[in-house]
Image 1 (cartoon, chains in turn red, green):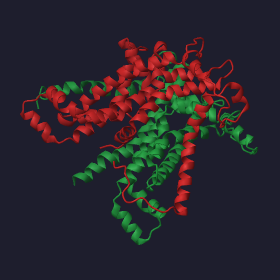
Image 2 (cartoon, rainbow over the protein chains, first blue to last red; image 1 turned 60 degrees about the horizontal axis):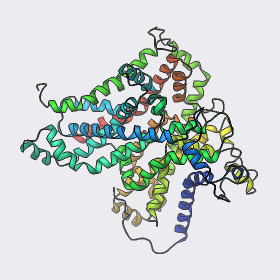
Image 3 (cartoon, chains in turn yellow, green; image 1 turned 60 degrees about the vertical axis):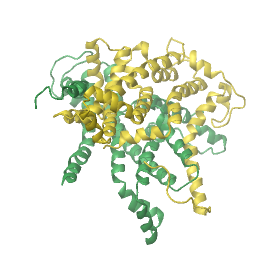
Image 4 (cartoon, each protein chain N blue to C red; image 1 turned 180 degrees about the horizontal axis):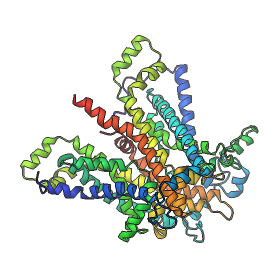
Length: 293
Length: 293
């Protein structure tokens, strides 16, 4: 997708353009407002939060909330903050991303270059799976994992993320490989390459851009997942989003909004970081996942 | 074709085939079969016909859930499309700081639904939130008690969801706008068509594939909505913002009423199929047919 507009930039500011800028800046302020409120609330103390306007900058900075959210905030009777959740999320995300991206790359490669009868039927079935609501599959899948003896464990949740990441990732890998020149593949075949050799020596070295897109898509997707982590990860491996929700939605005691907001920021740091450093790649990922080829 | 031909590709695709059959197809069959039983705490094969469905349609809570998903689906889809298209058009006006604005409009999309829900819960807090800010600025008539108002709480969910998802539509639309041929713009300006008219009556119809893709993706996501509502309203006040997904999860995991949950999840599945089927038919069948002619 080309992102640079064509033609010269208009030189004179007309009334229309001033109106345009005013409007777009107002939109931007609306989109930024929740982020702004999150950050300033996390830097206020509770007295100020109760007394002052939610949109006002803090009168004096208070860093009380951040360490508390990280290591002391309570979920139920356990008061360890978000830190265990962060560790769990890393433990879930890293292997899930590696396994699902590797498997989907292999799938995409087989589908693009080694078509056999019926392959696309199963691929269609798999794509269909991308749209089925999780609620339909959660319970039977739980039974399957229970039968396999991996329910509510780290391998269990990794398997679930691999399953649900597969359709869209396979699609983007297949589309990428299908856009490569077929002659390249033919030449490798004539040179005696087999399925495995061509994959490792020809295809993988060319896959860097699409792999980056896939990794970004999976890292943000898995880090932000709530439902699957809640059901499949088990008590000891609960991801950060689940713990965040538990911390904020406590039924008893005084709600500490500054701690809640720092916890919220901490949970969204990883995807935001991925988003801000990857920028255009993130956009490509969205477009690749959305536009069917 | 002998079976062992292309055997490596068949082995490589085996995980995908097994997953598609057992998880995507198998789980739906499992859910359907057990939705015809009166399973409570554990699945038992005790056939009761369509009893669970009859009971489901008599539940007041299910009615509310269905009504909510229609309101949410309608407002969220329309809101995302209008705002997303508007933002894409604004950004397409050769403005300064284009990439900055794009980053601002898309960053909420990197955040999880849980984080989105919790932030908006704080911003819309009836005591300390935006309502309070407006009162402090002298606008005492201003009311924003949506989260505690039975009739309006679902619209608070819509606002949060549009804030999170509009950037996604913007990206899709912007990709479409940048693909419009420069000659079309030239001929439109020679004809002297006003710019806003050209966008609505000429360009928008040209973007139809983008719009259709966006609608299908958004609508398939609508049916799944769970974490956002859990974080923002927990289905409340009362059960005013409950959704089918929440109804299913509740019956599975806290009310031990498996039969009901299976029946409700099958209804969710059928509604997704109803959204997808016409689009898939058009996208994969009709288009191929015309492309081949």
